[in-house]
Image (tube, rainbow, N blue to C red; front, side, top):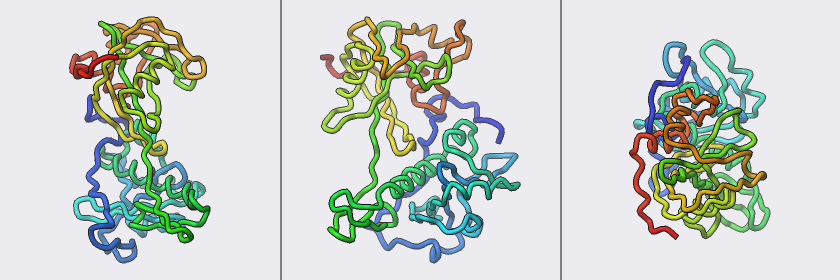
Length: 319
């Protein structure tokens, strides 16, 4: 497929749609790939890339038949994700060195950022791939118990690890991130990190800390990075972000102050942009060549909905 579908809004968000009925160890036994039958499919990760069966005329698929995945060799990890339309779906990981085995016609190895940018698979499959990638990364990093140091083993089909020494159960984690459109009057506050591509500005964002509400994380991160005080905060939308396993929680916030003082350790620049400027940036027509993230990112959705006046009012009392 040569490019992403021309869609905008929530339908454009990468990794946010999935038809996976997730496996639960509480409901029936966990099948293995060998006994799952001919309808079973496997999402295969080789390092940071996913192996796709490519279709030059349409979106490809990461749902490989077991015999297709077998050409990559023995899998280091194999887990049961659940079912899509009744079909059992697994995920497996092999070494990154296996990716070059799939440049042959009909197959390709693609990292997840490029996969979303290209629209290389159907939107409903992106969420499935995100689940596979996040879980496989977690397994790769949790081979030993944080409590006693003993070796852990896969359980519950891959949705748990158990320590053979102390018996402690370990569960996959998701890291919550607050990403916020801070608005004040007819302007919004955007920043750019030193790693951004030239000219791109985005919404501010930061990890939510233990014992912290989403609203307070929005206020803290905005003040730490720019010195701007924030009052009312409202939720708008969310997006799984499998790098490696975050959940972007999109919010709209009311700026109480205007002066911007950037933290150089966090941001290269931050400033207020008018609604008309953001409209130009989204369209790619800004006179300074400034841009915003692509429609696959939740930052784009927040900006798009603000420009279109469809963001919800921040109803929580300000502080």
